[in-house]
Figure 1: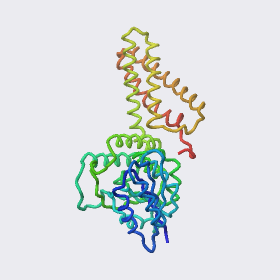
Figure 2: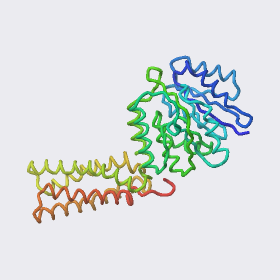
Figure 3: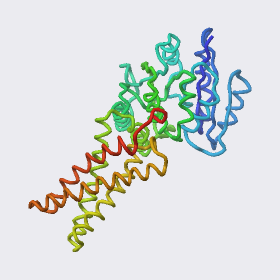
Figure 4: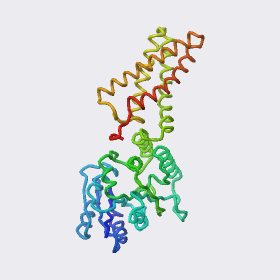
Length: 365
């Protein structure tokens, strides 16, 4: 007999918690034993007491409580670490998903075809409740972007129903940091980086309205976008890394040009104008690289990383000055001279950042 552990994050779900537990219990079979891990995220209603009552009445129900509200991702981390089943999945307490779908999702794991199985709301053509266009658009857009940066081909990254072999999710869990709905892209990135075998299974879905208690919103979509880039960009396919660096380099280049022209028009001499504008744009570039693309100090010690970055500034600063000065000397305007040298700087900086300053090592990927 295999044990399926379902982690159920609970936050103000007193109206549905008993019902969802009853539905989950229906999927227990002679081959599949259930363990339910209820994690109350400091509910302000009676959810925690209901969870305790369920634990007294039903075997293999564990209850944990956060002393302050931390978010779904934090509740899931607590549950993953505490679960003991052969397979560990996620079950929301709001009745949007049908637990019977786990009987289909678990088959690739039982047959040892998969390490991770995602339940997709978009695979099966079926009758469905129609709600929010922009919510679905955001989900599919974030899934597409996740696929581009992870090289996976999934149809529903934001799905609640994710099922893991225990050793897989308990290896990933210590790395997880997102406390809210950023968990979805974060865990997907780590699944891709771990090169685990991923399957998808069509599932049913009965969405709630915001009036009925749906909690995810636009700010969670923006956070998910950040998480895809922050956790996944440094191991993304090279073309995707370079496209992102074009944005970073473009922002830096625009800052470089605007500051340079402002200084020139203010009467600052060429040498100082180039130096000041380059230094400020380099700081903008470095900040955006750490925030979005090369997030690890993966190769150097803290001191070594600083020194290596200073060396790249010296190299690219010399290139920037030489290119700008040379182009002006042959008759180009200040604007076009700086624009061309900035393009050269974008390419040079990307190569130096990736293969010198933030070079990945095997143990840090």
